[in-house]
Image 1 (tube, rainbow, N blue to C red):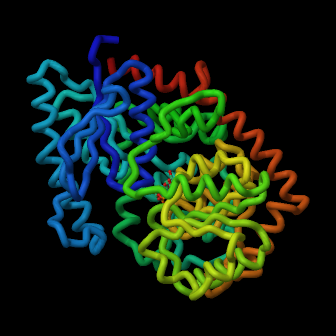
Image 2: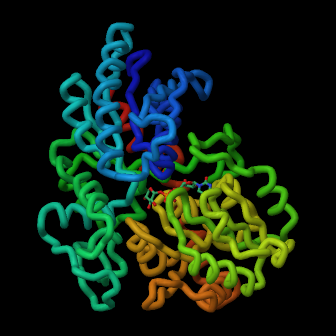
Image 3: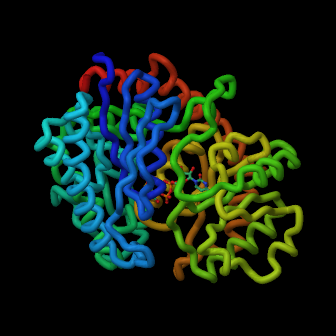
Length: 453
Ligand code: UDX
């Protein structure tokens, strides 16, 4: 490897994308590369270095003025981000070349496939980074190719879809945008477009590990130059003997770390249900009421992340009523929480990062998917990896309080819980093996380094 070899890494500006790509930067740095991480931000700061100067962070504007709401219109958001990147990135690459430190590759988020041509125009290899698993990308690929027609309704129960190496899926197992009645046609276009130029991509990176998606591996590797490099969970959480900087990524939120850990320290082993719906999911008031009541009635301790923008939906006087039984915080240090011995179960929306984190840390899960890839992840959590159960949704789209109580009981105390804990332990070991020296993901990262240098 040449001294000073470096690559540019560019995540889509959402927490579920920034976390795995910034972690990947750290892995590359540990292999001797010098990555430049570009963060598209509403308040860009001057560039800075981190991790003993091994990573340069280069914030660029997202194209919005102060006071404008970027989340009003997805098309407008994507357009402005694209315009800003197309303006800033070529200048940055030029500066790097002039300073004698030309980048060798651009690792870009697969949701921005137009970055492939930009990479090639500047003489860089283009590496698409998929933040969702192959089981989801394979479905989007079938839609892109026209091999699979999007169903017309979301809440059908008949078996609908058969994909190579998959269990049979019904409509509720498909990514949520894949139905004609979806309210998010623009997002459907974005997620399917990820696969639009995959046949031309130089390297395809995915935050998963080989054995986790073993059945799909042969198919994806026969089609594309795939390197599975996950889970991007830092090794210190996978193996407690390792110490490492606890700053495991770049966060758009501020975690209430001390409060969470102190509270967890006061609880018995495996007694706490950790509840989090990631950075984007919005629950309606009726669902918040059912969930709040179900958690209270479960009788278990619970640590519940309710983002600041959601707190007004917490039932009145709820925190007084639950007392020491529960703690509600606006953001948690999720990996530290999942690695804590007091946590016995993870009630999750099944975002891919949360799914991988729960699975890698051996925490049994209750899947309560909301939208996007989460229903498909939940299907695999329950039926393929068998590390959790999935809540039943009523015809009106709500998960009732009794169902929350039932699932918590089943995972924390039931017979099924014992089996789930066994599987969870198995996957924890396999995830650790994948990223350990000589493991499948570690070798994939080495291969990536040798290709780009
Ligand atoms: C989104 C999509 O929902 C997900 O399905 C897709 O695969 C990636 O983008 P998000 O909804 O935020 O992401 O969920 P998730 O993928 O789970 O990512 C959330 C991240 O935030 C995780 O890495 C998690 O550890 C972190 N987090 C969440 C915290 O650090 N603290 C919290 O309190 C909650």
